[in-house]
Image (cartoon, rainbow, N blue to C red; front, side, top):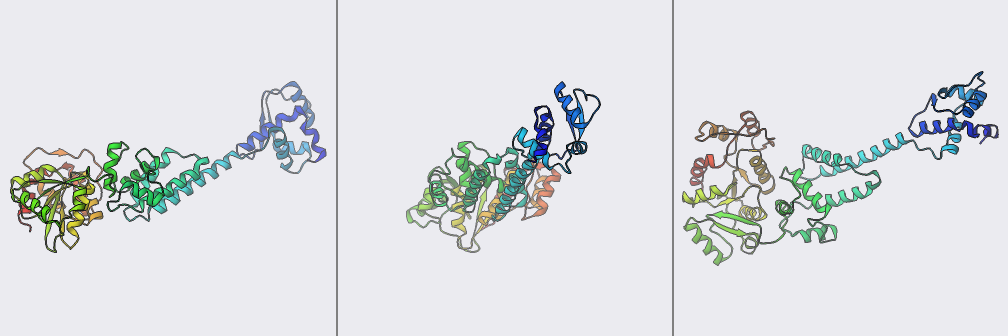
Length: 412
């Protein structure tokens, strides 16, 4: 420091430099300083420095330009050094906050761009999920930890939907740790939450729901808890299994198969021109059985399809057969239909605007409201979602069962 300014460090003048340091730490470039609670000694020192003919009182507003003139300096550079010597290192907290915000914004931008490379992710769902993560807040000091976790999540998401791989194998292959995606891990919950959000699937972190959610992503937690309800399936690659299926089909009796059984005794693929039907609700399978539907296999998705359902549909479609799919006319049904079409190649059946409006017109039971449900887009028939939003009426599969049963009787 310039020796000529050493007198400015005297204790009675340190009130100036403490206030100057406070303003700099706040990110200001002050033109004036407000000095409060001045002692008599500080008032006297200020009056001497500024050439005042009276004491300033306990509160004083000091112009920085006037201070420069009194200290005989051309600019405020020396004041910075004086402030640091009195108050310690100066950190521009405003600038630091801006830099932290910028670094976090770059993290979210990086994550958004990487999520956009996933074939099943769309901008609206990405933006919504990113906003949820932002609202939870992340620590700037832990930004590298968060980015590493997001990198791991992206590596997992790129492998989804899987093809029946077990969760420990998926975790070991992608992350090197078979327990990295267990239900009690933050990473496991983050991965499946992101997958469900991007695919507009139901989300929560209860353990019993996590099992089902991983199934929706094509991941097996075991071979027996995932099942599928079937009516009229006759062909299997195993002779004994085929005889059992044919007997049940002849008796118009639904059967339940586990994921393990479907893998052990795969269904024979349908030929081009052959059909099978997927319905959402078990009651429709029972209605089809009572109506002696036997010309086409009928599968129950029981809502969002289990891994067993996904696997069976894939087996049946392998040689060009057509899988027709129907669900309730509500938000959940539209999500299921959209997911089926995108992930398993099914064809929406009797799920367009005309069928919806006809169902309302011919309704023989009380109608229920959609209750302000947010409906997804329906790419197979854009008018459907818009029409449902306008009408605001929920139509269940049970209410259109006669039309569905008649339609199945006409298929082959």
